[in-house]
Image 1 (cartoon, helix red, strand yellow):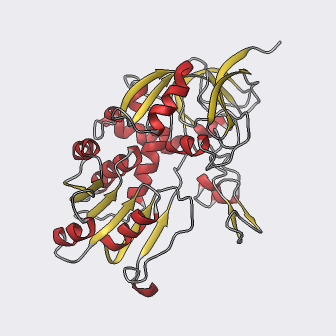
Image 2 (tube, rainbow, N blue to C red; image 1 turned 45 degrees about the horizontal axis):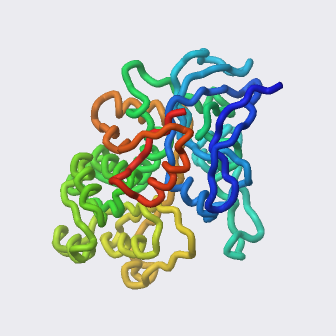
Length: 365
C-alpha cells in the first residue's frame, strides 16, 4: 500500500483544501523532495478563484524549499539529505523554446483558438508545479528533470532567506533585466507587492540611480525604500504620471516596470516612460489590454514592451542565491507570516484578502 502525505488540492473555484495523496514514485530523472518551507503566490489565488484553470484534485503551489529524500537513477551531482530549492519554472530543456533561450515557455505551442477566440499560444508550459503537475503545498513534491532544476542551498542560508528565489525574486529580477536599465537610469516600479519589491531591488542592482516606487500602501512603500527605492509615490495622494514628469524634468522615465496586471497600471506605466523607453511587464492580465494612442506615439515612439515569465533552472537559482549570500539584497522582510500546512485554508484567506500587513507567508509542513 502506498505511503500517504498531506497536500493542499484545488477542489473547485473558491475551495482549496487539505487532502491525503500518495507520496509520488520516483522515475529515473526525478527527485523526491521533503518540503520544509513553501509559500502562497498571487497566481495560487487566481487558481483558488477559478480565474486560472487547473485540474480538480491538483496539488497547488510552486515555490519549494526542502531536502532530497530520494534520487532517480539517472540524476547525478546531488545526494540524498541535501538541502535544495527548485524553480517554479522547471523545464526539461529539450524543447525548441528552452533551447532558444525561453525555458519558461518550454512545451508551449501554437493553438488555433485561445480564450479570446483568436490564434495564439498555449503559454506557460514551463511552469509545471501546481499548473500541469502536482505542486509544492504538500509534505513532498516530485521534481521532474531534477538534474537541471535542483539547486543546492548554500550552508548558512535559512529557508526564509531563499524562499523568494524559486519564483518571486526570479520574476522581479527579470522585470528589471527586461527594462533595459543602464547605469544612472530613472526607473518607475508600479505596485510594491512581493514581485514589485523584488523588481525594485533588481533595478538598484542593475544600476538605476533614481528608482520611483509606486503603491497605495505606505507600509509597502517603506519596505521599497529599504530595498532601494529613492522616491516613493502613494497613488492615493498624488498623480503618479505628473510626479514622474516633474522628477525627470518633463522627459519621462527611462523605463517602467508594471507588476500588478491591470489596464490602469499598464497605461500608467506607458505614460511614465520617455520616447524610446521600455515598459517591462510582469503583471498577469485577466482581460485584453488597450494601448493608449498618445503615449504610444501612434506606434511611432520607438518604445519597447517586454513581457516575462519567471526564468527557471539551476543556473538561474544559483545566481539568485549568490545575491542573497553576498548580502546585497535581504528579502527576509518579505516573509511576514508563518503557518502550518494544516492551516493553509486560513493562510489563503489571509493572503488573498491582504490583511495584517501580509506580504508572504512561510508554509511549514
